Amino acid sequence: MPLSSEEIGFLVLPHLIRLARDRRMIGYEELADRINREGVTKYSVGDGLGYLRDNYFIRRNLPMLNVLVVHKHKRIYGFPGDECLPKKEGHEPFANAHLDDSQYEYLIMRLTEDVFTNAHRTDWDKLLRELGLEPI
Image 1 (cartoon, one colour):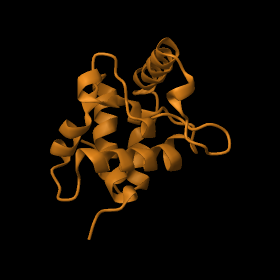
Image 2 (cartoon, rainbow, N blue to C red):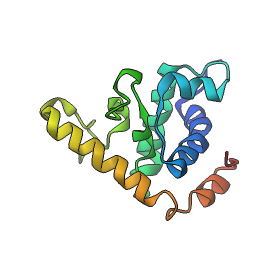
Image 3 (spheres, helix red, strand yellow):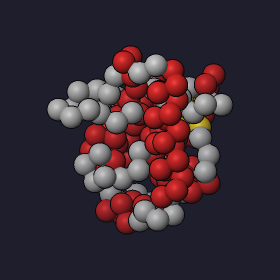
Image 4 (tube, helix red, strand yellow):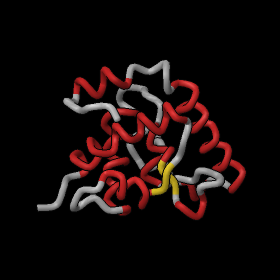
């Protein structure tokens, strides 16, 4: 039976927290390899990231850790997939199509800066305990 987006999100979250604390980014495929579990692929990682964005990062006003997972060929700029971006009001996906390249780059830079600035200020261990997860 395939893993749900929630299950994948919970497998991903401890890795995201470690990455934020270490001020690092990672590619989708590398993250899937680190998780090393059947059913977790570079494609399903995006589903887990979207789940975390919608159910934890946005609802609890937490830094968008999912911005740390980027397309391998774009890692120099840290461009994540669309599931990593915040949503607009009304829960419509945040479509980057209306942003020009410099606006999109600026948005990603600001989200990444927020993650790194708040990595040690946010009580991520409390969230992990609440979800029954262990830190990495």
